[in-house]
Image 1 (cartoon, helix red, strand yellow):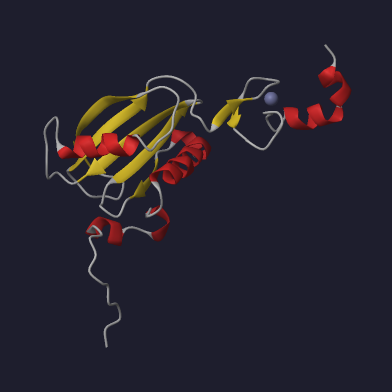
Image 2 (cartoon, rainbow, N blue to C red):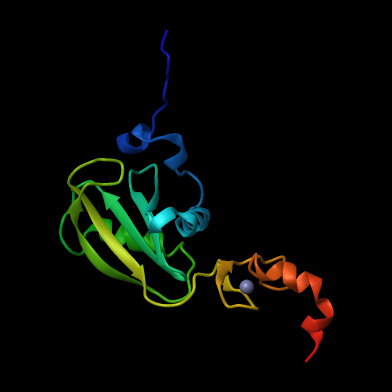
Length: 172
Ligand SMILES: [Zn+2]
């Protein structure tokens, strides 16, 4: 009796070998939101990543508030500029809603975050602007995650103070 009977699948071996919490099968837009939030919350500007069923790893880092880095990893099947890998990366980037543009800062080969050696990478950075899921606190200007349902964008320090003094907030 077979323990597993995986039906015909084009899932990459690296995807199948990865831990469940880094595999991503949903929409790329939703992946970007999750990656962005994880990167913003990561200790010490750590890179965070997901692997797609086709084996591409998408890594994200938030080196400073309002700016993101994205690094894609793939097996060294197609080196060289203008490769299909680079085109695939740029197609994936179109799903990542940002203010501003992505620019390629580096490409080469190295050890992927899942430990595979000699993988190609393409590294992009956000040219300028705040990411669309971020906002500035209307009181102190610090970077926060945007809450679309909230009447005002306030950080955790300013929100309680604003709630205490609604009259003062309205005074000119
Ligand atoms: Zn604030």
